[in-house]
Length: 116
Length: 115
Image (cartoon, rainbow over all chains, first blue to last red; front, top):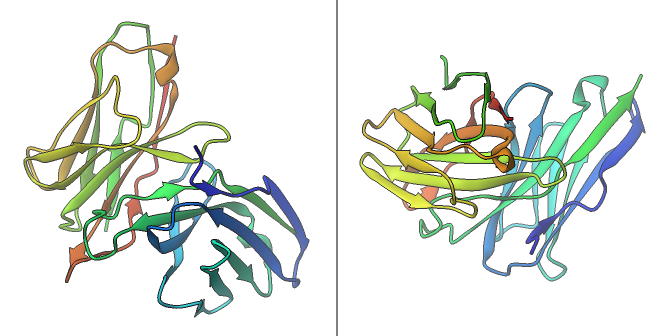
C-alpha cells in the first residue's frame, strides 16, 4: 500500500520554464512534508519542506504547495536550470510533535530533465 | 565536514554470506536510519535508532539486524544474504529538538549485489 505516490515517473522541461512536480498521499496523519533531490551515485539531498499548518513555503527558485483537503503537494521550480536535472522524491512524516521520530515515507521519485 | 559516511560503497556477496554495512555521522545527531532503494519503489525504511543503545524496526526489517553502540555509528547487518536483498542502501541522520525532527541528511549509499 503506497502511502505516498508520485504518479509521473519523468518530466521534461525547457531551461527557463517552470517545472511542476506532483505528489499525493493517503495517510491523514502525515503533517510534515519534504522534497529531496538526488543525483546519480549520490545520496538524496534535502531541498525544501512544509508543515501541515502552512499551504506554501518558498526558498529561492523552489516553492512547495500543500493542499491538505486533496492530500496533494507540489514542487515548483522557477526558472528551471539544466543543473536541476535529477530525481526528485517527495517524503512525508507523521506526528511532528516527536512521536514519529522523523521516520519518512517516500514516493517513487520523478526524473526531471531540463533541456538547455 | 564529512556529514554521513557509508562504507563500503560497493559489495558483491554470495547467497548465504554475511556482512555489515557501516554508517558514521559527525553532526552529533540523535536519530539515525537505514533505508533501501529499489527500482520504482523509492526509499523504504529498514530500521532506525533514536539514540545510542536503542533501535527499532521500520517498514521492511526482515533479514536485517542493526546496532547503535556509539552515537555516531549505526551498523546494518545481513546475517545470511539473499538475492532479494540486492539493493542500494542509504543511511541517514537527523537532529531533534523541542519535539521536532529536522530533515534527514543522507550518505552516498552502498550498492550491494547478492549472487
